[in-house]
Image (cartoon, rainbow, N blue to C red):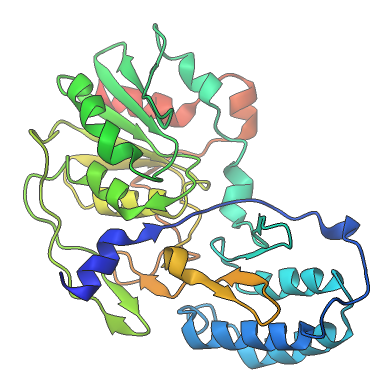
Length: 339
């Protein structure tokens, strides 16, 4: 198999997402090693060598070195985690994380659109629009049912493991006779490329060129997406997105937006397009580790969706106040559009 294709197919996109570190109670202890400066320099060099968006984000990486090197020199014990947190946050990348001594992943940066929309959606409010209980797949990854008016609804909670490759075909079979379909991918937490393809290929009626991707500046050569499955869903589809849609959810949205029977509704996504999966993990001299993506994945307009996000075709803003009032205006618009 072609090397690029193999990596594309196995690409776990994105892992994501949003844990924040409360570092105010870190213990300051005597240093166990004398490798804080070595760790810092190794991390700085790794990012300088592989991270694809320093120029795009206009980050002066040399000035970042000068700012944080003295802090690394002066750090004692667990103080270095504070330095590492602030240093990695300079990338403003929701995929970047480091691992603590106990193995936990700490993400130093929250995209601002996620902060805006993280409470602007509720599955409990969504359920008020149904006259029956939603069905749940065995893995618990997908909720689905038919709304009044014969409109299908699918909520995908993540794109990890083989959940969608195994379960999405049966979900679509149940919904195949609906007059329209709502694919709700708000609040996404990343996942594997195979699951993205398991979803998007069921809506294709002809081959679709893949969006571009680059590793270390070298463009991947990849065949187009092909329709898959026993049937293709060709009735109108609405994809619901918001600022908490991230990584694999954004990838899915960008591909589906290219199809004439698909409309993206909601608000601009969080903005996380760097890839790399497990291969992004990099070990520092002390044994600490960081995850820095190295694959530059682009939208169909040639720009990364890193920072920029994926814009909806129809913007319907929704706030926490709407949810408290029991309304999901984005879902309401989708239902009316498909009825």
